Length: 106
Image (tube, rainbow, N blue to C red):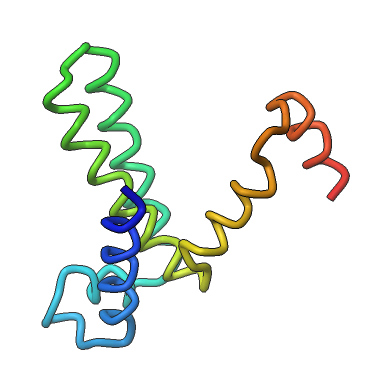
C-alpha cells in the first residue's frame, strides 16, 4: 500500500516548481499551502458526505482524492510522506488518549 503512496508522493514532488499550465498538481502547488489546504478540505467534506450516505463507490473515489490532496498539501507545506510515516511509527502502540494528552505538551 505505501508503495503506491510513495510513488504518488514522488510524482507530486517532481511537479513542485513546474509550470502550472503543464500539470494540475503543479497548478495546485503554485497556489501555495493555503489553497492546497482549502482543496484538501473540500475533498474531505466530499468523503464525509459519501460516508454519511453509505455510498461505498463514492467514498472509495473521494478517499483517493483525499489522499492525493493530502500529499499535495504536505508537499506545499514542505513536509514529506516519510515524515508523516515517521510520526505514525512513533505513535504506534500508544493509546490514542495518551497520544492526544502528550500532544498538548509538545
